[in-house]
Image 1 (cartoon, one colour):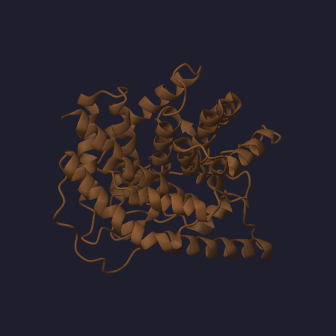
Image 2 (cartoon, rainbow, N blue to C red):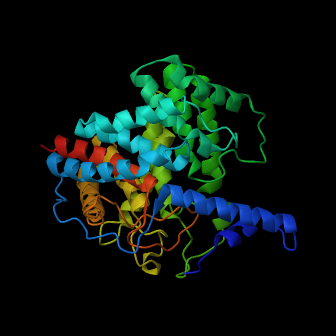
Length: 392
């Protein structure tokens, strides 16, 4: 497979300029930040210890919750000292709230609550209007909706208001990378739910479909990560569709549709696109039940990629639970995917095979773990558990 380094990607994006000392300085700063972010988010030890042997892949609540607990306990021990307001951790917090609701163990939600209080319910604001810095607002809003204390949504609403008031530039997408659909739209949808003001939902809807018009490939039923990949190809000649990027989109459908009114005018468009993507994702599932970092050239990758696989599993199980997807078609897909993920849990509770922070497919070690992948796994577990209980 043709591998693209961070430097090459930045050059394509026009951030670096040949012969420019300023450009090289920007490159060095970007590389340094990436290294720091990766170190805070996860690691990939040479010796992670043995894989777990006491877990079951059965779709039974007791087995599902045992796997969730093992992974959540390990991750919370490792991650709590590093809690921050980054998008990476925002996905973990979402998963921890889901883990508490599923396992009826308050320690996970208590940990998230403590985090939010420690940051005084504030969003990061250094890169406004960058969607990644809205991501932690999703958990703030979920906690607000459980217990409506004004402080919990004050920063989120202020930034949402600022976003809505921002002059629109039709030549420049607000959410120009597909990951952004998981980071910001669910937050705006929750501000709508909290306030009843449809302006937040309408803004989200407008921007979602502008991103879709640019990045969604209706012939392949997948999203390009961003415009750089419109013409790039995998080694087998197929288009490059990043696994985790599409996982973010599939997770975003759940997060948005969960709070969108049933009679919202464009809801049917979301359902239609969601079902089209679900069918494609099911069709390209690998024999081990998981998906690769590059979705249309699985043979180019030695390992499956768990973060994208987790968000696919989460989204597909949710679709079955909500009556949107046909159980006969999709339950076997979910079952294989869940079993595949279980096989990458270590005895310590580490969840492996998670690609580090990136913007395209890449290589990684079997031991590689990152908090967003664990968040996706816990979200998946919450919906797989609900599916298992429906089947009782």
